[in-house]
Image (cartoon, rainbow, N blue to C red):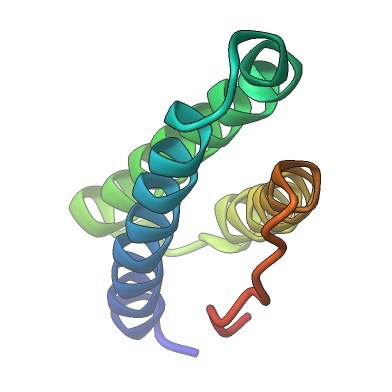
Length: 103
């Protein structure tokens, strides 16, 4: 896959993840204090993973390195972590939703 295509794909995917994050935050806001405390760490982790992925994709887009596979591997690993934390958080909230984001 070409670097530019990969960056465009990841940018679209990050936009979808941001929408998912907005949904998680809305659902968490409806929880009681004790329940919020139990998922707060996951929500914070999700925000950090999205920010890290954005930074890496932005770096790839701006710097366009000839060897970008190490950064791609970092992004792919962060994506797996984010998907897992999202699924765990949604399962805890009790409104498990399937992850409809490709990847």
